[in-house]
Length: 125
Image 1 (cartoon, rainbow, N blue to C red):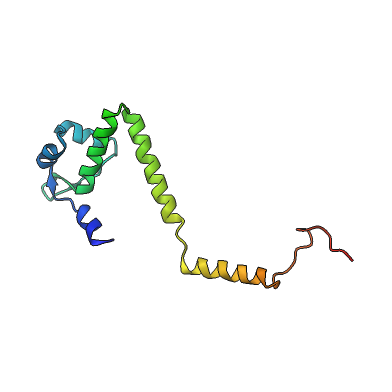
Image 2 (cartoon, rainbow, N blue to C red):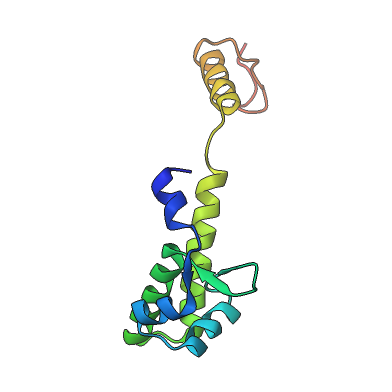
């Protein structure tokens, strides 16, 4: 993780500061947590602590609500973002994958691959 992203994900803001930065009430912020839209960490004293990323999400939620999107729609947007992020992570090729693909391509281009007679019909004599 890059240092910038690491710092943005550090939970350092108490709910009072988040309320001032987002102009949301404590109840609204807790509601979005209940809806699994944000995931604040807990301090040793069991206080919610928020990161810059959490604040960004809260501001996005405010924007979506202002645009007329309801809570179900907002949750769907974040589910789609999560699915897209997971698909991107799963689509990353490893060195092993690249080597296998390159090997298969070289073998097939060089005419060294075994021919499947059922694939292109019966061989002509």
